[in-house]
Image (cartoon, rainbow, N blue to C red; front, side, top):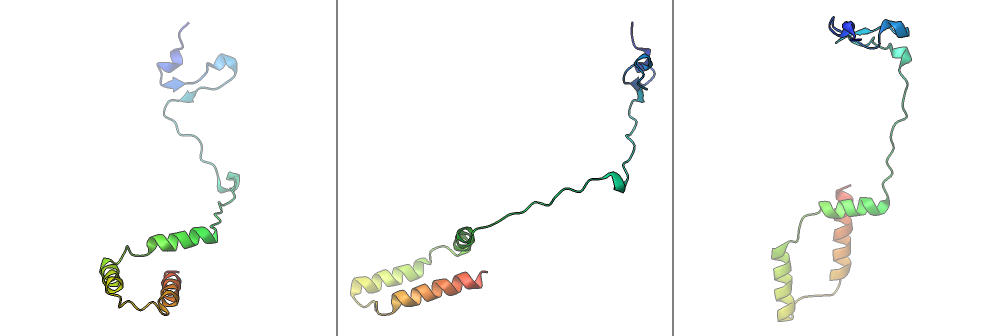
Amino acid sequence: MADIALVAGYSGVECAGGVVPERAGAKAPAHSEATRTERPSDRVDISDRARLLSKLSAMPDVRSELVDRIRQEIAQGTYDTEDRLDQAIENLAEDLDSQS
């Protein structure tokens, strides 16, 4: 036997089963604010290593003019290596701190 309720714009189970059919396209009843459940918020933990890698990736690319000048100074034997490494480390630390 065909369900005549579908022709009339209703969908759902026939009334004989005790379920009232819903009107096709009808909106579900709105839930009040009291019936909404609160969900816990998400949390992200970022390691110190990840922070450092992020800072390093944000730094500018290779300064080719500076690299070329230093290579030239090394080739000529005029590159002063005294205190250069310490200064380079200090500069790197300052660059990382300034991007925090």
